[in-house]
Image 1 (tube, helix red, strand yellow):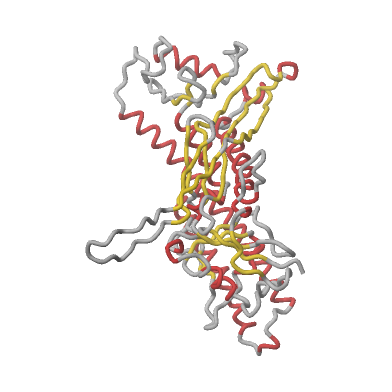
Image 2: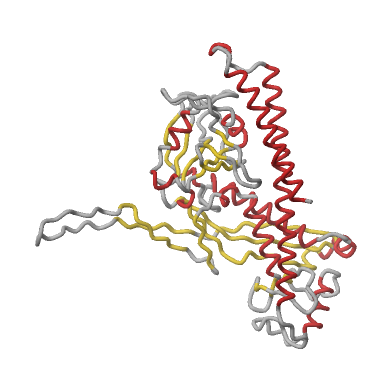
Length: 426
């Protein structure tokens, strides 16, 4: 049923986009001096933009729901395939000395507040009978269900556009400074005559250091709600914590200061071209010298080396996307092409486009569009993500406290990989 609904929504999205393009085409066919949109056409385009945004949100929600359902089905099927010893612990690294029945009873009592011993406790999801899947969260004696950690991390990834551009990610178990070596110049091979010596031409090597900045989320729920709830409280906690952490780190990956948070890629990305003015219109981008309209994107595309383009992506704010989606090339073809498969990003010049709310909007002295191979942006994760519970932190108000702690850093390691389009100060 959900697949059919997803197909229907995708088809509806294509139709709305086609209708919007018909309005723009009508304006494009008028004489040059009359090509600006009328107020009625502007109103129609704005309405269609809103409808497209709503459809995109519904499609994204359906995809997340399908992923969550498939994760649950996979966990059940995997557990069913595992041989079960009812008198043994299902994971040798978890040496509690208790039978599976005893552990299952304790896990069931965890959310009904029967197990309160004053400690910060790891969170469990509802266990499968005789098949408790575990993963270490705090240390070797405090496990967490594998499916829950994956759910938390998936929400973190889904809410960070930069993570969807396939940056280079280093995962470490501890948070000491991580030194990443890099080559900034390769040197060159030499032609040489027979029996003649080769001259040294060494590569230029340097390094960058990634730290482990900490970001966290604290959630509190009444003990009554936790005891009486009829919905998946663990899934809700994962969604809320993952979404909020994802939003926070994405903002830092784009424009972080590098002091108590990652350094955003905009801090080091080179400017490929600068517009002559900081203001734009609803149907075009600010011009850059003789480069106007959609040619701005073509110029930005060719500003990075060909070796990067096959893996490159565009990143821009949604308000900028509204402008870009109306641009055409000199043959009257739209530069923006909708995705043919549900869930895949739309494209410009054959490369994917990611909407990021933390990218600057078109204005004075901003960098509204970035393009490049985001593998040149390095992200460091300290794993695993900590998700913990305390029954006593808010004892006087009878609230149950949950906290999510995530340590990460980010830095542009290859300054040639990503370039931007900027607007002037005036």
